Image 1 (tube, rainbow, N blue to C red):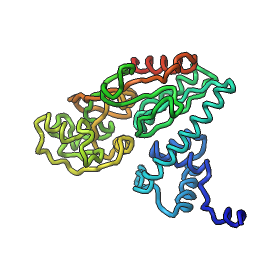
Image 2: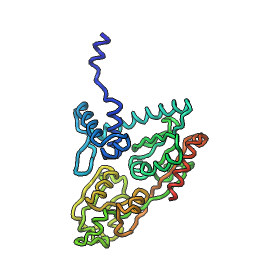
Image 3: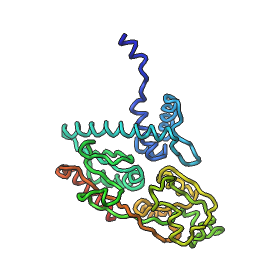
Image 4: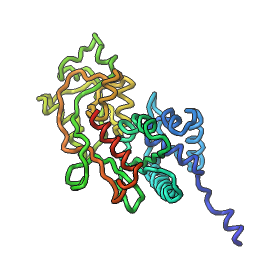
Length: 308
């Protein structure tokens, strides 16, 4: 009887499939997920296809040079991220007990993809032998309960708490690809010129992020009636950045997240008319975490990167 019941139990996806899906969903790129997992883009794509076949639903919308999660994909990503974060936290605790040096970090998807991960190579070069584990999702994790050493949070100061260290604030301003910025047929010299362009938005029907809204920015410029050539809306900021880098339109850039791209020349700011956000980025350490040298070194490294 027990053997028969075992045969009828639904088969769970393998850990490799979950890891591939979680990375692709977090980064919204099969190529970047492959880089993170040391796999080829085609290998990650095959993993996603196999997972979709096992689940019987599409998890991604494949767009031209861009990915977006379906409704089922967003639901499954939340569960997959939680499962993997729990497994990583438990693994880190066991490794730490066995003498391995691990730093467990929780942050949001956008900050991880656009600020933290591109800089991590500098930390690993400076700190060989320290294993960094990053859990990126939208939840505010309990550090002690969930086994994290450090949280990097984007929130109002009141939510961050009195023990939080403010890393930097945030301003928003229009950004686009250098190709669009230099298009002589459609000069982009002043805010009114945005009427010639596609505007890229975060889809925010409940108005939870008004400081990232084109409507608010245009109204502050006295252009509340401006009608762009078209509008494209995305579910998260990483998708917006993928679209703007691909030259699909103009987005509102968030100062700490686009600064590196502006410096490298992969993004352009046609006019610096900034609006300040009421939120900021904070570093929060778990109780007693700073007593471990690897966690203290990671926190110090984040502080130095924030000052760069």
